Length: 292
Image 1: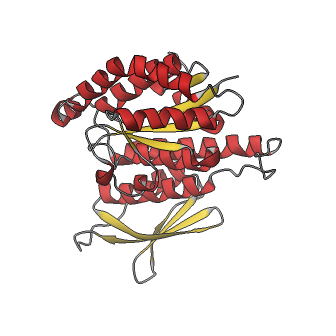
Image 2: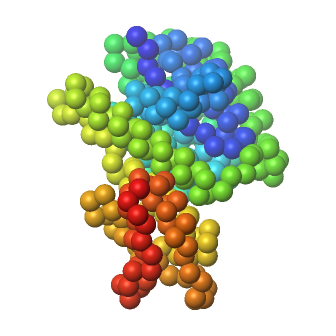
C-alpha cells in the first residue's frame, strides 16, 4: 500500500520544484507514491483522463506556488479539486520565491510551507507521516532521514528560487486564459463523472458518500464564460443556471454597439454542453444558441 501525493504545478519554476519533490519524497518516506503530470503521463495517453483519475484517488496534495503562477486558473482549479477530494484537508501550497504573507485568496486558506525553509519542509514531512495511518514510521527515524537528505534538497530549492521570474516566463508556453479554462472545464466534467461512479460503491471514513465536485464545474464554467466574453470585448455581468441552460447578462466593455455573433454563442454552448442565452442589462435577449 502507498500514499498517493498529487503534485500540482504551472510554469517553469513550479514544474522544477514539483519534479524535485517527485524525486525526493520517496527517498525520505518510502511509502509515498508521488504523481506528477509531466513525468507520470506516458506518451500517447490522454492527459485529461489521467489527471482526472489521479485527482479522484489522491490522499495528499502539494501545490507548487511561485509569485508568477498563484493567480493561474489551472493552479486554482487543481487546488479546489484537491480540497473537495482529499480527506482531512491535506492540501499544502509549497512556496518558491515568496513568503506566506504574499499568498492571495483562495490559496491563502491553506496552511503553506516555504520551500527553502528547513523547518517548514520538515514539518511538511511530519504532517505527511502523521496522515499515513498504518504506514507511518517513528518520528525519530524520519528526522534522521530528513537531516541526511536536506542539504542537497535545500540547495536545489534555493537554486530554483533564484531563477529570475523573467527567465521563467520566457520558457513558459503562452496560452490564452480562455483556452486553459476550456481545458479545465473538460477536466471538471470528467472528474464529475468519475466521482459519480466512485460514489456508487465507496464511502468516506465517516460513512458518508463522497460527493462529486459539481461546485468545481460551476466555478470553471463561470471563469470560462468571463474569459470568453472578455476576449471579444464584452463583460459577462452575471450568469445563472436554469436546468440545462445558462442565461448570461452581458454588456459591451467599452459601451460600443458591437454585436455578439451567433457563431460565438454556438461555440460557447458547445463548450459548456448547455443551451446559452445572452441578455442585455435591460433583460432583452441579444442572441440565443440552438440546443448543443
